[in-house]
Length: 289
Image (tube, rainbow, N blue to C red; front, side):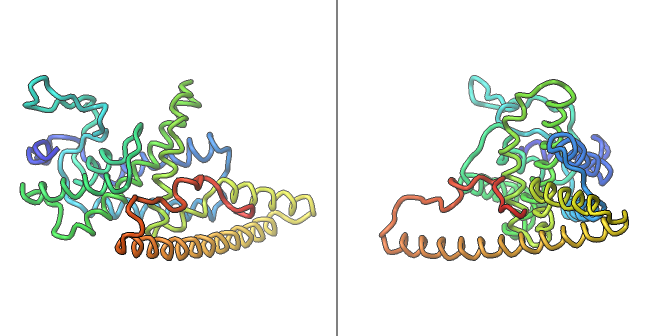
């Protein structure tokens, strides 16, 4: 990857610009939300989504550009028989864009899931070697890793849309089996960063709850404007309740992780533990949300 990126020159490949990033993100509401989940976003929800998309794109485009493969993952990499070089397949969609993209693609694979610790180690090794090679990855690994996660989120949302399009338009349902992996990727990143928390409100159960509430208002004889206003207030209340639930969960998780770290340091626990993560279905939500 570093050799490929060091060879970068502007003007050789198409730019991975705002327009292309936005077109890719548009696949998520079109195919995942509307077609796969059968949810119609109201005006307020659409504004939340559009604002989140603009925030994601701005963060991604803040990083310097290099050659970007756009699908840099194990199944597109081939080792030579003598181990002297690495072959790269499926490069026809390569562009010139953010340096964070291909490393995000590698550690957040479409068909394989790895432990967070392993992914972090891979990104650290890449960052160290990229810095040594003079690539523009910055001097602060924490800042770079945040950027990798945000770039990965753009990819996750895009692939959720693409895999749903493959299922519903192209008659290839097998891709739907990997949707939970990308939903988990996207949700995990959105939960980590305050700017992305509004995305968590766009859940399938919240959407169903708002639609049901709207129908009750219609059945009660409310006018169209009344229905719109009351549904918007109801959706906002659900979002606040969900945010409070997320905050309580994060506090509990931090408390448990602190205890586990203390036990490790004292030798009481030596094996790696996963609290909540392995048992919690990422699409599980409370009845109201």
